[in-house]
Amino acid sequence: MFDAADGRHLEEAATIGHGLLGDLSADHLVMTEREAARLGRGLWSLEFDAVRLDTEKDDTFRVETADGQRYVLKVANPAEDPADIDFESQVMEHAGARGVPVPRLVPDIEGRLLVPIRDEAGQERVARLMTFVEGVPLDSTGSRAHERERVGETLAALRHALADFRHHADGRRYAWDLTHLPELRPFLDTVPGGERVVLLRAAFERYMTEAAPYVPGLRRQVLHNDFSKSNIIVDHDDPAFVTGVIDFGDTVRTAIAIDVSTALLNQLPRDVADREAGDLFAEGRDLLRGYLRHADLTAEELAVLPHLVMGRVVARALITLHRAAVMPRNRDYVLRNTEQGWGQLAWFMDRSPAVISRSFL
Image (cartoon, rainbow, N blue to C red; front, side):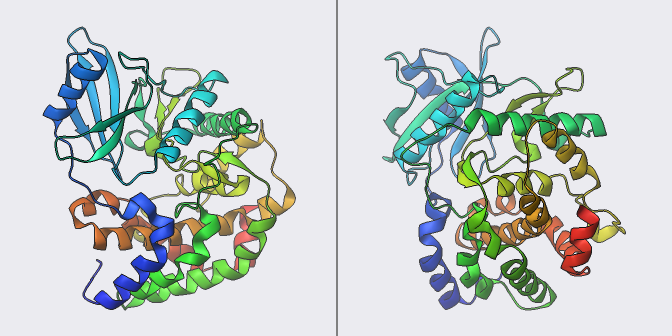
């Protein structure tokens, strides 16, 4: 899908985008399951089997002890700033203390929640062990309207829980914060020619007109910023439906509407290109209904919301196509959600901004 033959454009985009991509553009020598088990013995005095989980930038393992206790071991990318890791961990602890179902960090034998290590490859890293959230990821099961409302209610609860949270690293510049989509324009030059790049350029320019001018004036706070189906753990037999929210790696101080738009994006149908999609937001509207039951959105936030969703589709294409080119080892995982975006983007561009706004509201 991504032809990296034009090395000059790729290098230019990498240079311009480095400050935004940060550790997202940094590859590393991966940790083996055997080494993960060794860490468990040495740092937490736990004997467990480790199974690697696919992740975007670090090494993550599902681990289980002989007596059935399950945890998640995360070993950060060597390029990840320790301040960012501390920020993400404190956000998770803060949300958990406010009643949001999130994993809790497990101290090592010295009482540390964030454990600096040098791995067997000689890389300086930070290891964290956290409790395992029971249930299944929402992206591996279906959902009914009232269950999607529970998802929206959980997003609202998380927003309220983090409303007063502050951290010296919460203002980090991060590519997955849609605030910075205009800065990703150079990545357009690394997308191969054809109908898709024409579509992507047109959508980018529409975003610059319909959404970007309003983003600086939107209300902001620390937010999860990646309320995707893979990060929402659910149980159909639990009245709450949502049993856990995981992966705070994209957390940042950003616009409330951007956080909601990310959640809505992840409720869009994946097969838009293969069928006629009348109301792209049908399932997302259930989530929004639950959200608005407990948290407000201003008239301006509601008006810009569908255009932010389209912007997130654009950002996902630009970031993932670029990362797949510079980090081919993780290509399949990085591009796992990119293909569906072309049909979604075509749906947006087949309709005028005014029509989209009216149908959404």
